[in-house]
Length: 94
Image (cartoon, rainbow, N blue to C red; front, side):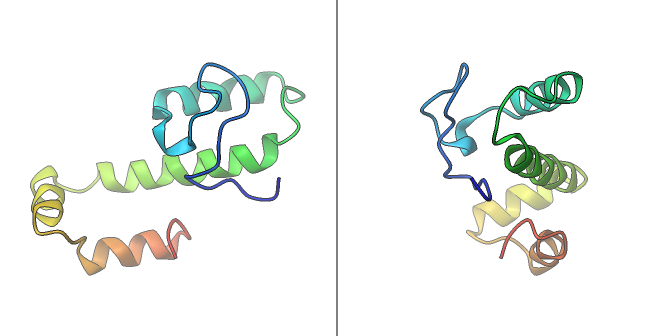
């Protein structure tokens, strides 16, 4: 597989059959740390690890924003342009 996306279905493990967007970040972090210890685990590991890196970066960026700012953006049905710009800059969204 070339590139994993949020809608890619997990093909193994505890979350087999689930789209990646439903998998907790804690599991993705665990999987990444296990891959670093044992790099021959899964044939699609490179694409999955790239996806995990994008998710963790997005989570880190969103975690730096004040919660009220995020809440107001969600309540208003939009994400502020500067948040979108940052996410686009890191190729986290198109």
